Amino acid sequence: MAMTNSPTSTSSEVSETESVRVQVVARWNDWVQVRDPRDGSLRWIDLSKANYAEA
Image 1 (spheres, rainbow, N blue to C red):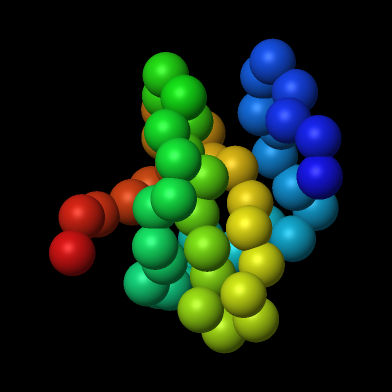
Image 2: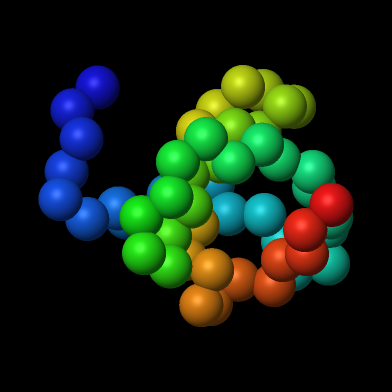
């Protein structure tokens, strides 16, 4: 998998009312790459636009 200079959001967005605990595996400015334990997928999340809370 090739890395790009800037992350992009994926089409598999979680609904705003659903809480999911994920593992942060990378960070780039206001973006974090997280691993979803439900299916092992990786995705980028823009923290400036996401509703999140640290565990």
